[in-house]
Length: 173
Image 1 (spheres, one colour):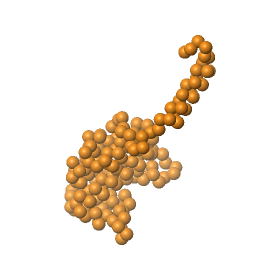
Image 2: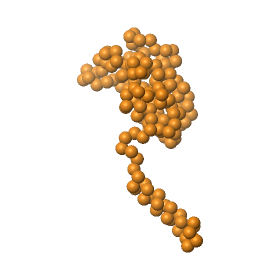
Image 3: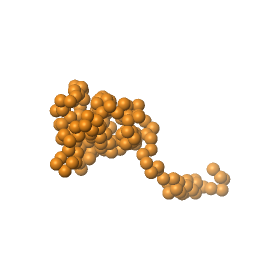
Image 4: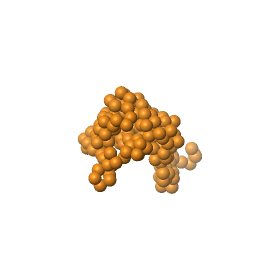
């Protein structure tokens, strides 16, 4: 610290520098890579589709930042995307579209996936899919419910199995 500056002046200069950096250095325009893999191992989604990898980075980044509702919504989005990928790969996506050609809501996607006879889902994935949907729905749609780390920690081990199985069924790797 310069002998000519008081602590208050130094703190003021530091605050001004922080403001200037914030105003000048913006986040990237696209999804930045996550620094952790607390939710989804990136090796599971590596070399699949760019948008799937971005969703995984966002889920990991949200968890690491303590943004648990956002993380739950990204988990929901990842599951929804992978279910659609499975149907598209098998060329039976019409089964999960409404009369206007729009994909069904996640509730109906999960029901269709569980009932589909073109493949067999593992027992663990069958039991956890409704739970993954539920936490994502609560985070996205329940205005009085907020996710906590412990809510996510309960489903993360099962999410890994689900992601890997859906990627395999969609032949993305």
